[in-house]
Image (cartoon, rainbow, N blue to C red):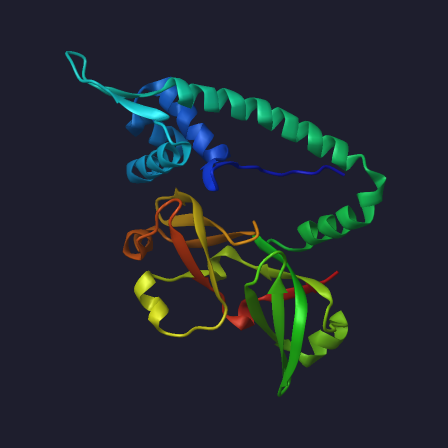
Length: 261
């Protein structure tokens, strides 16, 4: 069984760079143009500069700088620090891959890996959040299941039928996976937070991948859990989202699928 994973480099508690940001830096080095680099990376010009500004701020020194204009016009280039980051990330990525390969060979993890493999085969949900059952409240033919997210003080409530609760043998203290499609994650503007809402999760925007019609937003929750939201590209600007900025997401209890472990 093969393990896959991603990692981020942080500096002074700030997210500095992951695979997508390093790809952007690489394209800037190759093209000398933020416009061409954004196009090659499949993101908008604004998203590219948002990522560059976030990296420059997190690093504490510029990783990308605008070249002075002249007869041939100006451009964009990596600083020495930016080039060092790209090279270091490549080395770290190789070590990370070797670590995953060694972990895959650890027979003591086989039961857990089999569980994860079955989940991967049986669901197309982008979000698979590990949680612990905190409370079970009967609600007519349904049960409201209060969940404590792994490694976080944040919680979710799922609404499933009582029959489903019995089939999953749910009990207080049991570990479960909450499966949530990316399109079911609703992102809220800051001014909408004045109204109380159930299942409200707060985190930080890691990445924004714009498409012609739809955009994916990667959010990191406290504790390191990542959440993916998919929404219409026309909604992004209205929400005021930016890389490394705050994000607020809501999931309807009826749109959380539980899987017992």
